[in-house]
Image 1 (tube, rainbow, N blue to C red):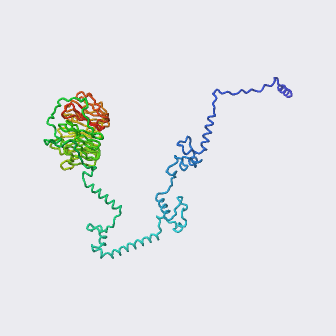
Image 2: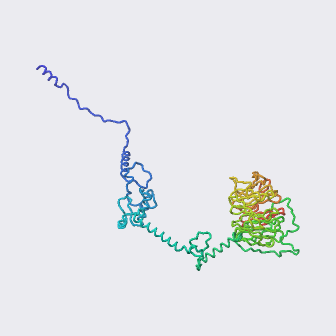
Length: 572
């Protein structure tokens, strides 16, 4: 055992030196370095935003706020531009922010009326009362809708008492009430259809009452006068400017010269200015030659006057007709020229005697007439048509002065009336950009022409052969329509080049039908060839708008133009 023990001790002796301590190497990562500062800041800002209050003006929140944050009171000073310190986004009432209250409308009305009557009301919380405490104790907290039984009983007794007193009074009056001559009978039977009115003693009227009565009487009188009261009243006057009204043979000054004969088999375009008539103080709105002969020229002015001029001899103004209070819009001769119509902005249509200057009759509907026409048939010269500003075409019988027909289909003011088809039909144009064809005397449209590309047509004229209509369209062109059954647009014929947009420039034909002419907004008169549709000639006629152009009915190359410069010019 000792030997074994000694052997173990020998083995325990170290045979080599002690090893050195182990060296730890630094760990390395192959991933790139990342700056986590931004992440830390984001986390910090989110935590901060959760703790800070929400701005009441902002419309979006980028995080989920808590209930306490959403309903927290507004911090900070009042905004200088926010009314009552409440931001615009927080308002739900013109006086600020109103919270919803769970109170019924009946309960609210009850407390509201109770407060106004007794001076106290229940607090919406239901715990106590607000207002006059003494009144509350005195009335035992009763509301206006919750009257105690004792009060109800008292009111019922009072009501029954009043009814009994009323019955007693009736019994007292019964003997008098049986006599129809007494006031008691009248009061009792006031609803009876046979009861006569009680005579009231009229006291003196005050100044105000007298004035009102006078005004009322005047208005009633004006309403009673038909025709004159509808348009503005103006004294009719006429002045003759010639040497004498009848010559040595007793012939009237309006008679046509014997030697005037038709000489226009072949018309020519005028080249030069022959004569200028300057009598109107304002613009001239329309001119018309004397029918068939053209020895006189009628003109309508914006100075409220109508003048007739000599064409053949002296070239002077023969007569002035003054009967309108405002500018004259349109004129129209009868077939024989002895009478003519005028339409003014004073809402009156007047029928004049050309020779004497007397107004034969006046017509008015209370609206402005834009166009007047007499039926061209010789046996219907007593029928007048007028296109009005209230979308109607009104037909009068001149002999009786009564309205015989109304054509009411247009959607705008009526601008033109043109007879076609041997005067059996007539075409009207309007501000509603349409053409309508009517059978004369029948207020039903037989043809309605309206296209999306169409413009208003304030002037229409018939070709001498009667087969075509020339319409001045406000898109600076003259359109041609057939007067046959279908009233089709002739797409091959279109006259353009002039600028007439915005003006009702008159379009017209030469008597032989070879030329079309029209004024324009720049004061020029344009002539086109009917066959080729090419511009033949332009004449600078007026300063401003050349509104009217008429070809002489007998002379081959003579044309009259009128403009808003107040001049009428005669061209040859």
